[in-house]
Image (cartoon, rainbow, N blue to C red; front, side, top):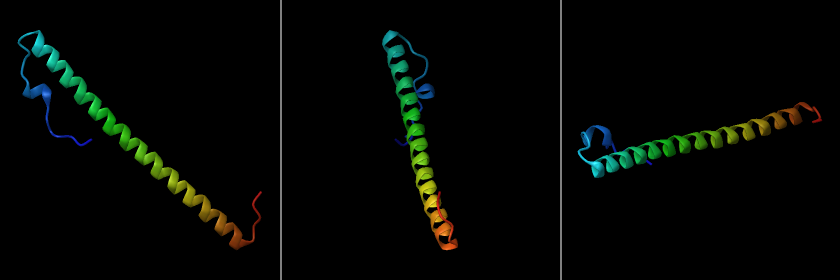
Length: 73
């Protein structure tokens, strides 16, 4: 998810009653969940990218070994 720039902490002010406090906490938790999900997605994407790079590297090493006449063990 993209960050909409909406900051519930500064925009909502001090909660006045229990309903405001409940909404404030729900908004805060949602904001934290969105940020966590975004960071998790970024980590997974980077891990997948690294996996593809490792696969490519292994293939290139195998090709170089074949060209050099070295047998794989």
